[in-house]
Image (tube, rainbow, N blue to C red; front, side, top):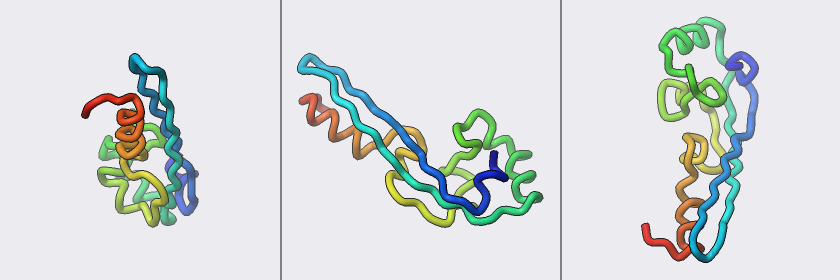
Length: 98
């Protein structure tokens, strides 16, 4: 998977739903991540670190994989897993305190 991402741009989609007494509110965060070209030894070292195991997309942007990220468009927190801007907006819509 990392070899396929090498030198390309991919989308990360993260959906959030908040349910409250006044209804259900949804948001979709769409981000684009561009990886620089990675060599096979770089990918092997990263995999050997164990960090990509169990991660969607086989990388954790908040860790060692950051060295491969050339560009991000969109929500950094959404790429990590929970888009905070969108979540805060949904909580306000639902009139929930945070």
